[in-house]
Length: 163
Image (cartoon, rainbow, N blue to C red; front, side, top):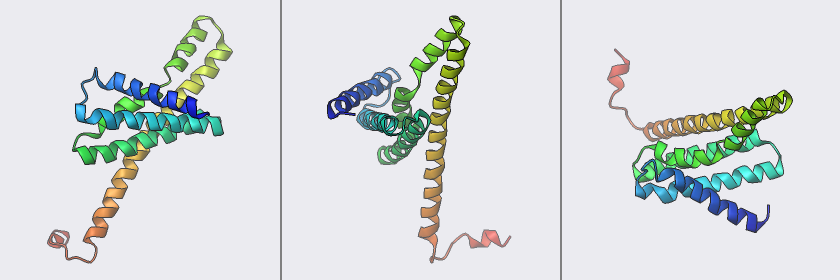
């Protein structure tokens, strides 16, 4: 991917996330962070497809990055993570794949229909798995930090464990 193409795709994906965030009335403070997250994750998706050719893996890693950045931004801005996750995720939804899947079905081209359907649904599954994995990673990291903070210090609620 050339630098020119990367800059164009960065701008287009930024505008795509912004185009979703404004109609759903995302808070103005969250727009820049959310759209930057979308643009960066889309560039990651494109780079993985260029290197590996695997759209499933690219979608998974891009969704994972969106989830991690969404959790970080939600802590920083003290807003729900959904505000920072949904607009960038919309960019990665395989809308073209859904269109071609239905088009091949209507044309009665079953071979292409099945091929496109499997590809489209695998990308959709990768997106959902990436978001779930980032949420689990974030929760386990918080639990680990909580345990390490209390380690070596007396717990004030230890009497509950003995009952």
